[in-house]
Length: 259
Ligand SMILES: [Fe+2]
Ligand SMILES: [Fe+2]
Image (cartoon, protein in one colour):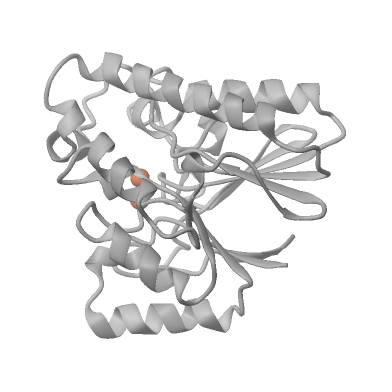
């Protein structure tokens, strides 16, 4: 099965002709399915974009922080739950056996303020543009969101059928070493908002308990391309912009995996 991976495509930045050209590039990869790891658009456009991508091939996706912009986490997730079944927001469905040897799971993930400098002066637009951050203690909110994502991942993994290969989609890199931009690991100012420690802990625990299973994590968010082997059977691939075409408005077809 050819699974074409997209991440951080931020399609809301594209004018109509560029959007059409991007869809043609996705189609040219001849995917049987699409795997999309978040930051697809914003709250008012993400349903439209997953619907259009779903016309190319069945789509399995998680959301990124930008997909919640100008709304709340609960409202956007409510909209995902109302999508038709061929547009699969993975957190709502748990583990899916997509080939005889491959199981797929997904959770959105959040930078959970549990590594790097928690007093970092780096400001994300999230704080203004997602309702959930407008009140309360921000770092406490992030820790709670990360813990919720970890709990959901643990429950999906516990219910997953045995399989040779587990593919995990998530938006936020689950380890600091997977948080890559411009070929280097993000520094302590970025790490609190760009790593989900809670989900990394669950993945490492699962990998150690299932040494016979190969686990591939696909993520994005830091917008750099990287590969980190967290355990002998746990590889995290971070997707982003190749050098030379950096910037919003130039989405790439990240890769096509044979599953
Ligand atoms: Fe992004
Ligand atoms: Fe992001």
